Length: 386
Image (tube, rainbow, N blue to C red; front, side, top):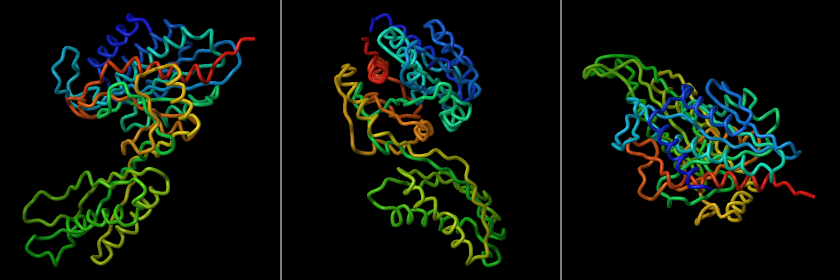
């Protein structure tokens, strides 16, 4: 890798950081990506899932099809950093590092194109919109990005604050949590605060629900499995002397596998009904959002780590056996369709965490991440000349 390539990638990353765009609004980012891919010689398709971009490299030799994915969207957060390339769009910043992921993949695309004479098959690179709560991966799949040609295996990555900068690591099996968001409306009977016996208090019922939900997480779910229930919002009346007629709660439920999800989500309806029944209250339970658990293929995880070692992509490479995060990632939708691996690259021990207004992607990890994509591409598409 030339120094000029890395310098250009850092400049691109910082340009993207200055101009963040929210989910399904990544028009400028998509235009930059498409322009760069065309200049490199990729066949480019734009407008996938509104703003997604797909770059295709056909080596002209029969072989497998590898899929590589980067996410492009930013978050509705006001940046608190004060460096020169801070966000120029109020209320919007790259607080999760998708600017770095996009820049990484552009560098990987360049390195792969340089290596095309040693490859067979095809490389399909997906620049995806709407990862942050938009299930952009699911939309991309519905629009056919894994077909024509059919992807045989797919790979993506995320930077990880709290791990040594440049550490490349992956976990076989469950590696990131599934996430479900539910809205619960508890329907009581409004009344005077001085006469609760004439009302049905949904705040009291909601308080019971908060406690009972933790009972499910602590006494129904196996302690050997990972899962958590968070009540992230509890809204009702703001008047001191009024018992409201309704209260609304938002629940976020994380799980490491379908069995865990069933243990947590599967009890919701019964639990809420049981809390409401003695008080003649009613309720509505709405499923707002779902991302499945991210489960890496065991074989491809091992091959990615082995390839990273062979090609010396970093001084630190590791296959881990513990759940590295309960965060969720819509790359899981791809892994439900085709095998592959979602790996991580440490962003630094002192890095602010993801979705924090002081977060900053570490440019020092761009090379390690891009070379990991190159390594697995060479591993999968190696062309053995006669």
